[in-house]
Image (cartoon, rainbow, N blue to C red):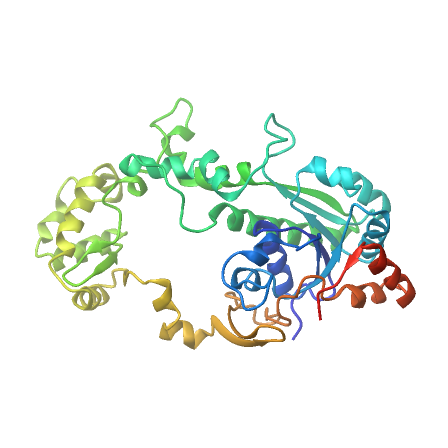
Amino acid sequence: MAGPFAGIRVIDVTAVLLGPYAAQWLGDLGADVIKVEAPPEGDSTRHVGPNRNHGMSGTFLNANRNKRSIALDLKQPAAKAALDRLIAGADVFMHNMRPRAIAKLGFDYAAVAKRKPDIVYCGAYGYSQKGRYAARPAYDDLIQSHAGLAGMAARIDGEPRFAPTVMADKTVGLTAALSIAAALYHRARTGQGQFIEVPMFETLTAFMSIEHLYGAGFVPPLSKTGYGRLTTPYRRPYRSKDGFITIVPYTDRHWRGLFEIAGRPDLATDPRFHDYGSRTRNIDALYRFLDELAASRSNAEWLRACQEKEIPCAPVADLDELLQDEHLREVGLFQRQNHPSEGEVLLTGVPVTLSATPGEIRRPAPRFGEHGPELLREIGFSDAEIDSLRASGALLLPPN
């Protein structure tokens, strides 16, 4: 079965992770994604981490499947003309350059829409162009800092820190994919293309503010910013008798069950803990109690006790352990595939299920410039024209 975006063609002029992750989601759901890469070595993520062959890192393989690659030197007029012809047959154009840089190449929204009025055009970059930070560069760590994520971590123990994943890139990448999907739906109804701006700073700030604006969302403020349950130093995996365990009682019923497990059913009527509001106001004392209680049992004992009371509970898994997780094996999240150039590889499958239009891995991540001639022939280039582009350096191909 074809994915929901079957028949949609995406020109993906993005690199690193934000844009490639967004484009991969579109590809996973059926779109024909054309990854446009720059010489001399393409997307920098090709070189992040171990590889069997140059430019084919594991990180790249897991963020660029379901794409075809063409390598064009967009500083050359002939390469720009080739990209123009690709755009003419496309539905979506996306980039993550700073706006000044893409405009210098001649592919800002005004220029592209003039040639292709119904294009869905997405620019995903550091800051909105409406404010004073518009020209600033941005990467994931910088946005985690500027948007408050690292600073919120400092409320726990005084030390700002980054999440141990590229939180900003992937969060904003998902937002970009959703925005493109919405614009495609609008175009399907009206025939109208549009410009989409997905700024990292504003998107992650909004993401952080959902719960952390807290009482400061009232005028005048009812409290300072920050949801206390998330910033107490006692919210963490707890040390058990034989490891670490995460126990998350949340509802009144959960807490009554936990107090019964602890042999302290009286705490369910303690004024500090008897309902959600009182528990939130006394979260440090409550989670300190949970911290001390966790050490009284082994992980297996906690899992049994919490299962009986239907209290959410899980061991603390290392990613290496998740590769062997039986549930993930049953649902097929990690998939072994044979890559044409890299041999057997382990990929993360599509985690969502669409019953009528499922996503799938249709093609492996491409080598740098692997599909250039194929793509150009599809839009009417002759072999002689392709040879001319290669000879001038406007088109690059991978080594045999």
